[in-house]
Image (cartoon, rainbow, N blue to C red; front, side):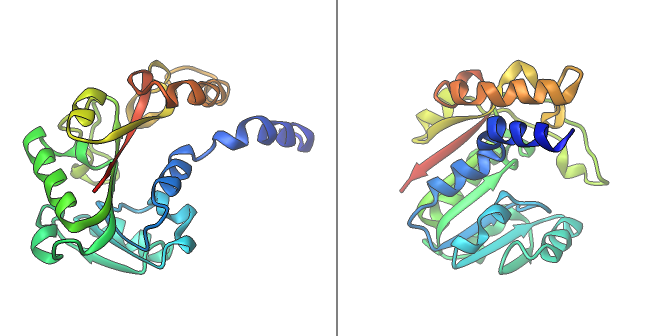
Length: 215
């Protein structure tokens, strides 16, 4: 892509890049401490970490913790079973508690328990990011924890007290690992970005959902 084309591409599509990170940052206004549950190797917090005085990442997969630590994404880390968070951290320990691409790796029963634990540890906000409905996904990167075990719908998250925003554009355009279903992927990726403003306010149509509960 030539320099001029890159400039045009950025001018048209740049505002929609990393839209989950943008929405997440906006939702965390007024929060000064954050617990990133199942932080993985490349948490979206990396895009705006400097705006949060203190963050901690917890994960059960040690290689992911080490990669995140190498990127200096969080201030502190703990290798642990995330389902034990409420026994490690006291009630109202963090302004915000988030889980990005985690809850779908748990059974529905465990996912509901996770939500309760997050709401217990958080003071102000709980944020969940997950595919919209069940999305089959296999293990990868030598990590069996990456298999999807449950799906979460817009209406059920609203019933649990969460405000829901659509993320990643129109659902039919993406498949496993959020990759584009059609080729050329660069072209269809841009189409997906263009659908983001529409699906943001119509989360039932979006590939993924960001769910925010204010406590």
